[in-house]
Image (cartoon, rainbow, N blue to C red; front, top):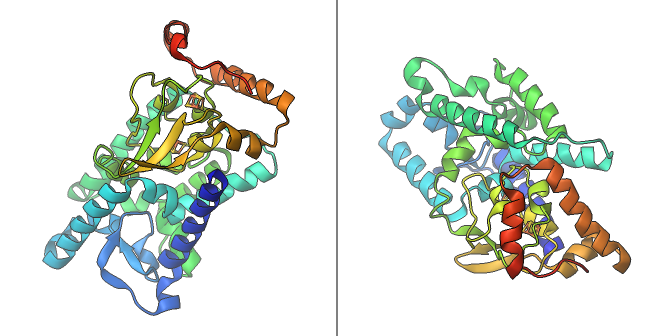
Length: 324
Ligand code: SF4
Ligand code: SF4
């Protein structure tokens, strides 16, 4: 199931990219009623549906036509509640571009850039500033599209020629950056943050069994969004945060049975299992213990959790022993 989920995500990303970039050319129609909340730039003019980002940035257009206003808001709320940031993980064309670049880096075994907690704190500040510009810039004469890396990339794939503005240089920065840091732009995307604000009520959830967790930190190391809670949480079973893309990388790399799982309407559909972890890693028996121990050492150097020693001592009593 794990491997299937991994390929299903890539497949949906690819289909979504084709539909949102060349959909009109292939099927000959575009829906004007549904506005998908992903960074599929409407300047493409070839996508099978428009992205709602354009209308949120240009409220004058959307207030002028009540039908568009209703469609954009209703589409945005429904998509965000049902899918949450799964839209970013599974449907965003700019997300796919970043994933492909990161995959190329992995194939060439080039060292990635890892962000520390301090970096993520700064990014957290930046993304709220960007959200303020995204939603409020219009009222101060600032157009967020001029800064958006997707304004250049998606239309370029569809062969649309558009003025580049500053967004072209910003796109080069993020495209190059995502080669070294997975989903670099997603960590600060204001549109993704807006969708993530529905995370408390969205249908897809990320679950953790804290009694199964051995605090190896593999999940944190795998997470493109640097979500610390997936590793540090010791009580809650629902660890969904507004940053989570539901990419499933943490579940894929969690070595404990039921340690992490993705669920839809309380039904777990993608669950971490020790068997799948070792199968995927292609490890022989004697290598298994070493692998889990290595994960623990790596994470200690990546993440300095305040009072971690104390927390380990306090939590180990109810934990299963680590090993193959
Ligand atoms: S928490 Fe897990 S599912 Fe969410 S973004 Fe991180 S790796 Fe992906
Ligand atoms: S990968 Fe699994 S076992 Fe390791 S810290 Fe994360 S949840 Fe716990």
